[in-house]
Image 1 (cartoon, helix red, strand yellow):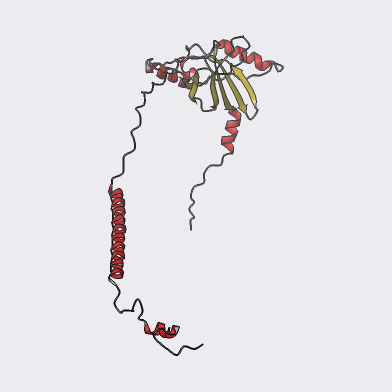
Image 2: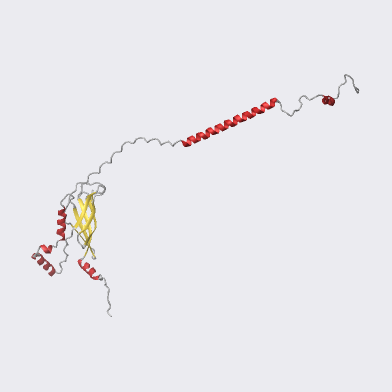
Length: 263
């Protein structure tokens, strides 16, 4: 049934919506509430930016202050107690007479002889003239001071007349000067630091101080310390036979001098 109109007639839905004004009409200007909310957001953003800038400035200033601070000195070491001085070295053993042997090897025959020489002791606090006199005595020719003994000449003639009697050359009188000093590290307590022969045909090749074991066997004592054995001095040297020395000098060619040619 169609209603043709009247006071109580209800319009259609489209017309009703068309005839009524909207509740919120659009406007080109935002509302006051929206403007306030945006300004508050800007204010909060500015406050946050200022806080971040202030914190960054504080961190930078703190780092600069840390860099500008001078380095702290290391903590002082605790005082060390005074070190005790090293103990003094032990005194050298008592010096006694040396049981001295001289072993000589003669070239070119390789004949080896060992004998006990006469030892003269000259200490550091002795008169130096003693050493001078001893050196002069060994450099002096005995034939200039003493005439030949007739008994020695007769004995030499008898030996020459006996062909079976072995001919031993006389032992030459040679002198050796040695310097012996205390040495705590040496088993004997002493050491030879210098040795020299005064004879032109004999040279020192070795010299050392030892100490016997005290048992009478004559062997050197090992280990360290002085011990109670006898001090020994062993000297080794080489000699050249007089004949070999003369032959060597004769075989050595003399240096040739310059020549001059005559025209």
